Length: 253
Image 1: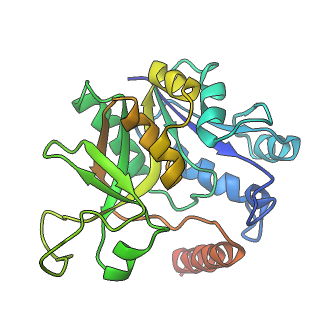
Image 2 (image 1 turned 90 degrees about the vertical axis):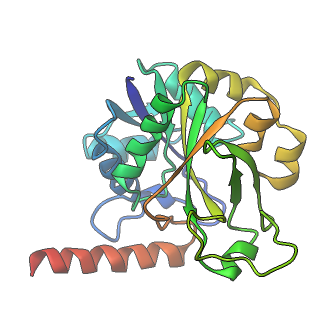
């Protein structure tokens, strides 16, 4: 399947304005994400989708592909859908512009999931939860799947709830999964999803993937190697810079 990665990137982040253009490593943050995406073996094209000319200039400066999108999109999915209309691809992967540590193998896994399950219109990833505090943390989205790996529900609540005992985070296969915000869509389904109004459960939980389940479609969930460290705050970015510099020192040694 011809596959394209679209990286939505906005300048006006509420918690960290100008995030894609942070450059303490000598590279723009958006460049780190772009270069990691290009390492995926199953991907034919990578493109940044943005509404800001400053981000366009930055991406063009390092030789990346970039498209200008409207400013009034309500979500990153809408921005990805607009960019996808100009791409010759059967599968569109939505990779957030603040994931500089994403594993290329995890990106490839998304395409494998859709190839193995022709009834699934969408694929995403999860990792096993290992700590009670993570299971209870509403900022960490949980997902419950059926026996074939299709999502039954996503929630900020601790699911599945364990009524009569303590949750066993060491059990295998893993019973408690944290969802990762990395998505692959079949092309035409992406356009249907973007045209659909928000669902009731989506608005309650503030989880866009619940719109897919409310529409009656199936989401295949794969188990990723690990949760990558995204950049939401300045502290997150500073930690990424430290990790990046340490990796460079080790490579030079």
